[in-house]
Image (cartoon, rainbow, N blue to C red; front, top):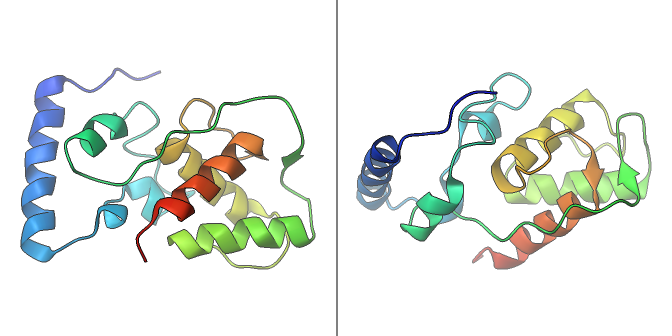
Length: 144
């Protein structure tokens, strides 16, 4: 693994983000990472990035991730309405995913990006119950 982020660096990021978001009226849920914008191509800042610290400082959008438990999963190769619902929720939040009802490589990369940002405890591209519940919480918390 890679090292964590020094507090001084995070404080600088918070100050920079507050300034940019304030000057340009950027909504909290639009504060993103490279991995959110380019899933499958970018993985930074990674699952060790302290999104909670930014959120608590008024930068970004976050919910408490649902606990990871064993259970049913949606994964590469699966098809059907559950996959379409997952893709629709990811697209509704703003991820670039085609709503096809097929859990393809693109969907896997987007699920990984979502997990890396919002449920970093387990980043594997598999949509388990924790991933789905965390995504539902996130959507419910957005001011539309």
